[in-house]
Image (cartoon, rainbow over all chains, first blue to last red; front, side, top):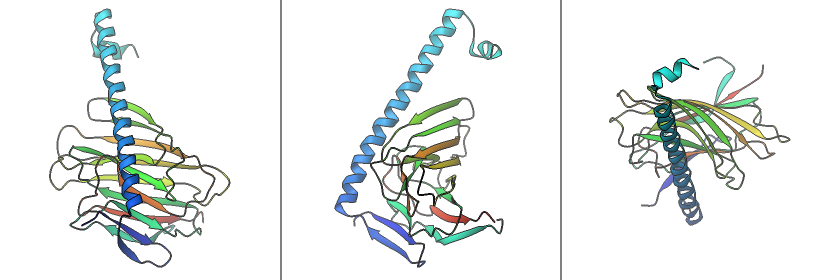
Length: 71
Length: 175
């Protein structure tokens, strides 16, 4: 069975369960690829930041807790 | 709930087969602001999922979003410039502790304004009955000069909302 969406018509109050159209399925696939890339970029940026922070702390010879005291 | 909150339509509850999205259409223009209250879990093979919000079915307008987030041990922030929707709110994915859901509150101020861009803000928490859990505050700007007449809510990483996921839409009047 194809994926469905639940639609509430706020004007009439009618609630419907409607199969996605081929265009909607294709759009979802395109969107999912974009989301996955954005998530991967976000995760990489966070990992790079953590790596750079660890390197800086090592260079300074202090711990993260000691660095927080400087804030 | 204050008497200025009026439910629009009915609460959506996802059935056993799941749902790709929960949509509210033909939203009346008679209110000042809109509030969405969501309890959600998706079929994403992971602990944490993100709740997406799309306006008027438009996928070609950038929805710039920024959030700050805590996970119990660290704080983080990030921005998003996805063109198809707002990635607002953290909820639970399918490998989170069984039967737990995330909660999202989304506020859409002055949604009937057809002259300026529309803003959205959200508070959300995921839940896993574990040490690590996420709380997020998000803000976004829909770069389109149109009144909001329909809203679609769907998972960011999964393909379906899980059974018992719910969404309720409320209108708020200024007086």
